[in-house]
Length: 209
Image (cartoon, rainbow, N blue to C red; front, top):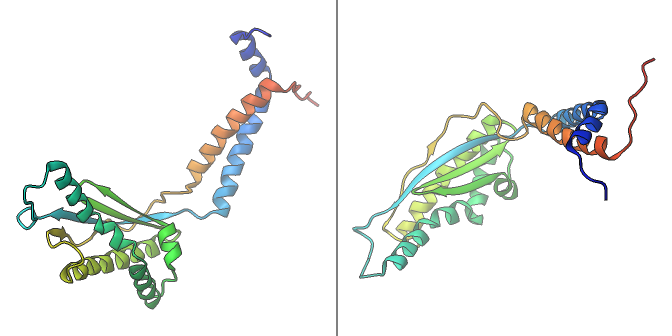
């Protein structure tokens, strides 16, 4: 088994530097082509403040661990309402009325719902920042109405307090598929591939004409 000598390994790579450079350039080109074929995605965000009113909550000497679980289950109805199939159909219908063509599948595919302590975030991505913003505003407002309606009908605990959604400004920078990020990622991937090729295969430096 041949012993690994760092200095010799470095010299071998240095003598084949052009292989690494070509791989980096090809990686950058691949990133640029991917950017050209894949439009960048802009993300619009709606934020809900969802809390529990302890004065209305029937505690009745519930153990603390069960109490916290009951709280979490009640607050988690937020996500269930936002992603409910019935609401998604209503959102697509309202969006279509406003000239925005979306469907329930694309809404779920291009969105995320996440919780941070007492805040819930609805994020929606689209190639057009204006459409992303308009869609998330329709969705969030209708979801809030649905939360209050379900609570009024007794389907959601009365001690859950759903705050009206607040919206972040219309996005101006894409969150996915930015050209510079893609090209940088391609360059890094190319560098790794180039180092591997330069180390494994016996390339010879092209002779000058």
